[in-house]
Image (cartoon, rainbow, N blue to C red; front, side, top):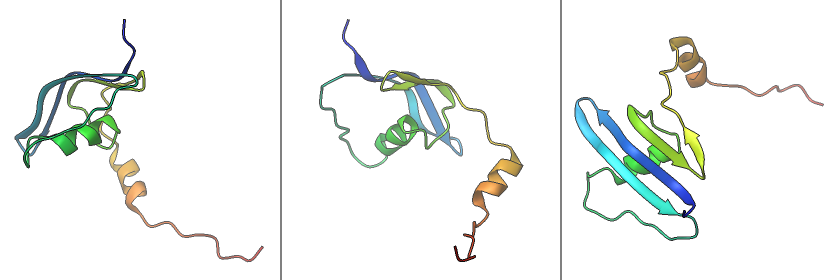
Length: 94
């Protein structure tokens, strides 16, 4: 069996009711070169961001480098608020 560096099964993503990915099945063997080609809007960037973990997986499964990425749960409001608050460095001289 060929080792896969990327694999998706029925990956789905929507934005405000607009479906960006619909049941994406993708298999990229290790050592191969793969590219996304197509016109604007069919979901190339959405697929890549989902594989990188930058977007929430609504349904389906994505594996990259043989590491499964389970469907994440939405972050709590407190976690989202702390992630968006500005952080300051300690200005005390050392």
